[in-house]
Each structure stands twice: as structure tokens, then as C-alpha cells.
Picture 1 (cartoon, rainbow, N blue to C red):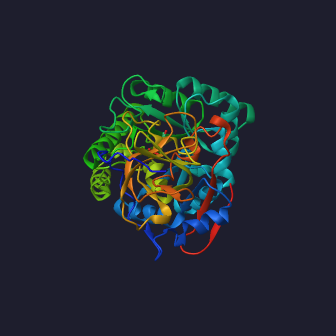
Picture 2 (cartoon, rainbow, N blue to C red; picture 1 turned 180 degrees about the horizontal axis):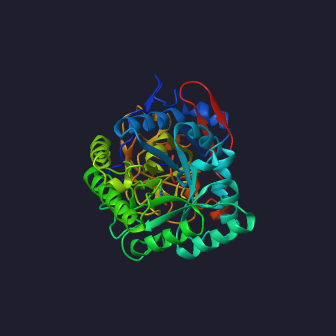
Picture 3 (cartoon, helix red, strand yellow; picture 1 turned 60 degrees about the vertical axis):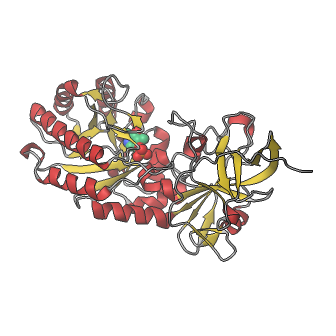
Amino acid sequence: MSEALRTDLKPKLHGPIPAYFGADKDGCLLIGGQRVDVLVHEAGDTPLFVYDLSIAAARIAALRAAMPPELAIHFAIKANSHPDLLAAMQPLVDGFDVASGGELTKAIVAGMPANEISFAGPGKRDRELTEAIRAGATLNLESAAEGRRALKIAEQFGLTPKLAVRVNPTFDLKGSGMRMGGGAKPFGVDDSEVPALVRELITAGADWRGFHIFAGSQALDAAAIAETQAATVALAANLSDAIGAAPPLVNLGGGLGVTYFPGDMPVDIDHVGSELANVLASRPDSLASSRFAMELGRYLVADCGVYLCRIVDRKVSHGEVFLVTDGGLHHQLAASGNFGTVIRRNYPIAIANRFAAEATEVQHVVGCLCTPLDRLGDQVLLPRGEVGDLVAVFMAGAYGASASPAAFLGHPAALEMLVAGRGQARAGN
Ligand SMILES: *Cc1c(COP(=O)(O)O)cnc(C)c1O
């Protein structure tokens, strides 16, 4: 059977493969020093997410080195709440930020002390407020009404609630992939309403923990991030003056983006860090005693994760090659272009067991779901893929398994495995 392949098909670029990934002498991709086929064998099946903890640890260390030493680093666990990963991240960061009662439980099980857990997110139910107050976690209030519910629940239990106020700032983070501040928003309390609410909380006897100000996500422009952080500190100072009390903690939000797509350049964290150091050094007296934190999800864990799936079929349609895998958007929605992006572009992708081979053929890599949305690689130039080969999609450590519609079409959930750098691996989910 001959394949009449189109020769005029221009490859579309894929995002940059993180530089720490390489191949062994047979050209097989290594993760944490181990061959991917061995990892798949150990896990027992594909599709499989592998998280190399040493990459996340190095990432956090580099971030700490760039940031002012007094800045606390929190992990927003909605990016990846796999229990083994959380347990491994716990000693590496200064706190976990959670966004549901389920995540709160996961954070506690992972060993994070409750006073280093903060719980944001709109629509917290009474039972979630109760769990947080009883555990001693900080609630980042999303509205005045939520604050009043929290006070009432705390009173019922005779407890002092730890309450911070999430502020909806009038600015947003420029160039951010997902805007979460500025204008009418379901998140936080409009900044003009904040002083009255905080005074009410303090009068009611709450342990007021400070401000949470999150202006956006997935920004790569260091100057824009620095500008937003400066505006955030200024806003916190103005609010403190209006309240007449200093916030114990100012959570500056996050926003540091990662390089998913062709042409993306890493954030210049040295620039962000030195600007922030200046801002903190010259901060108004009203914030003199305050501590500061950043909360990051994808920046800490996206690049430590690789999604591995297997080619089940290779077919040609109208001269174009389709590598059909056992994976797809039910595990890795973001790579299919259906999670927070307007135009679909290719995530970094490779034929994992031919990682060192020359790319010779323009191919489509698709998932096994019966929908045209299920595309992992569109018109990508790769080594010729064969049935049985493993496909690797990189930058899969954040918003992969935890942010994909796993139940859609009834395929099994992906396996997840943590490798601790060179040597040991643990399977399970
Ligand atoms: C989602 C979220 C984060 C993490 O965002 P990343 O882009 O993954 O860093 C941080 N803070 C809040 C409030 C969030 O909702």
C-alpha cells in the first residue's frame, strides 16, 4: 500500500522543549535520568504523566535566588494537586494556596501546616468555610457577604477566624494570558469597598491576615509584571492607610508565565526580582511590618511534567499523516488549544523514543477522542512516527491531569508518576 503524501505541507512550529531533556545513546528521551519506555513499563500503561521533581526544585531555587529574600513563595495547587507531588513540594515552598474544600484537604494531607494554607475562590460553601476555620487556614474572602458568613460560622465554633481580603484591583496585568483583575469581576472585593470590610472584620474580632491581590496569569513580560507588582504594593499601602492598620501579609499574586509556544521567551525573573526588591525597600511606612508573598502555579511545575502517550494507528488522509495516540484532550486539554487560548498553537512535542532522530515528516498528532478538537500536534515536523512509538508532550506539569475533562468519552484516567531526579521512581495515582 503506497502512501501518496503531500509534499507541499508546511510544518507549523511547536513550542520550545525545555533544555534539560535529552536522550540516551539509543536516542530515547530520558526523564529524571530514566528512559521513558522503562518509566511506562514501571507505571504499567500509557497515557502517563511523569513529573521530575528535581526540575521543580531547581526552578524554585532559581526563583528564590532572583527574588528579594523576604518574599515568600506559595504554590497555587490547582496547577497540579497530585498527592505525591504535593508532598514533595511541601518542604520546598512557604505555603499552599487552595481554591476548594477538596484542595484544602489535599494540602493538609500533604503535610502543609494550616497556618501556611490560604483558601481563595468564589462561591465557597458554608461547609468549606467551616473546614478552613476549624483547620486554622486563612480564608481569602471574595466578598463582604462571604466574610459575614465566615464570622458567623467562627462564632458558632467559638473560634477566631483567620481572614484576608482578596482585592479586585482597578488594574490588570498587561499581556497576561488570563485576566483576573480590573473592572467587573467575580473575584475579590472592589478596592473601594475594602477598607470598610476590613474594619468590620477587625471590629468583629477576626484575625485579619491582610490582602490578596491577584491581577493576572501567564505573563512573560518582566516589565509588565514589575509594574503590576509596584502598583499592587502601592494599592496595599493606600488601603492600609484608609483602614488605619497594617496588613500582616500582602499576597502579591503571581502571574509569572511559562514558555508553551513558538517564540515564547522566558520571563526575566532577575528583572522582576530586582524591581521588586527596590519597591519593597522603599515601601511606605504603613507596610513596614508587612510580609510579602507571591503565589505561583504553572511557573513552579509546568516544565517538570511530560505527558506520554502511545501511537495506536498511523493513517493517511488526503495525503496528510495522522498519528493517532491513546492520549488526548481528556488528559491534556491545554495542549489541544482548548484551555484559555484563542488561537491553537502547538505545545512542545516529540516522538519520545526517537528523540534524537532527524525530523523528516510533517504529521498531525491526534488523540483518541471522537472530536476534531482532539489534537496534540498540528502539522508538526517530527521523525516519522510508527505504531507503538511514544509521543511526549512537554510543559505538562501544570493544568494537565488536574484541568482536563477526564470523564469525557469514558477512557481511563491518565497514570501519574513522580521521579525524584536520578534514580528512584514511584508510580501510582
Ligand atoms: C490560578 C491561580 C493562581 C495560579 O496561576 P498560575 O498561572 O498557574 O501561576 C494563583 N492565584 C490565584 C488566585 C489563582 O486563581
